[in-house]
Length: 337
Image (cartoon, rainbow, N blue to C red; front, side, top):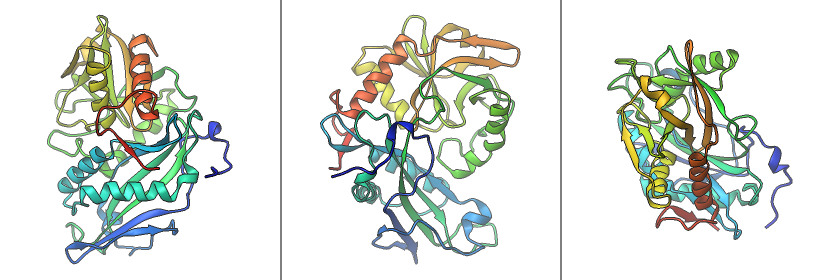
């Protein structure tokens, strides 16, 4: 099968419409059969629930071409489970988890020509999302919903690829205690847009959010979980009920333990202990791991090793699992074709 005529190595992280996407509708208490469509636009009422009260959630995952030429996805079952959690919290109907995985497979198969070749540095990004579509004028959940999956080929999430990032400790909050920080709701990202634009204007790549209750502990950034490596080689990740449970972070913890023999720790990470870490990275589906060079806490600068030896090993091992050059744990890889 011939790939699309694209300069894969020059792709940024942006939207390019592909041939097909998956659509299913929820009405009268049940999901329809769903299926693929070529139509990339959505028609809805001006009073749709998603437009009035932001009742929407989403996921993100990737399809890859492996070293032996197979097209695969990485742990889509965990994305299905996380979206189910998001839907429950947002009072939306759960799209069945097995159907979620089937929808991913169907979407990728229909867009095989758009899956970048092995070694190009690009991937096929998949965006499953759901939203309230019927008119809602009073503050209440919608009664009708649409679930969709689209695909787009992408390059690196951060401009310039893998280079040490400069972050700042944010004065604004990402999530409130007992709020929605632990789910992948669109509203969580909407509230961060002002702050990320401001960070870029001030010369920073991202914001580091601290807990809003005490403002003394590291939580995550606007678009990724954060990991640290101690000076004696231990992997540490912040633990909080307001952090989105990143699938990449969970996978890295297992990689660190089972592949690299590292000690790992999930715990509260105090803002005051940042100087005790040797390495720092941001992890997520879009970026895999991006090394952090500097965190600026107002007048205080904390420097890290950038792509240090441990971050590099973690990155190489997880990417190897995804690309088929390192044997994957059972159930991590879904082969599509």
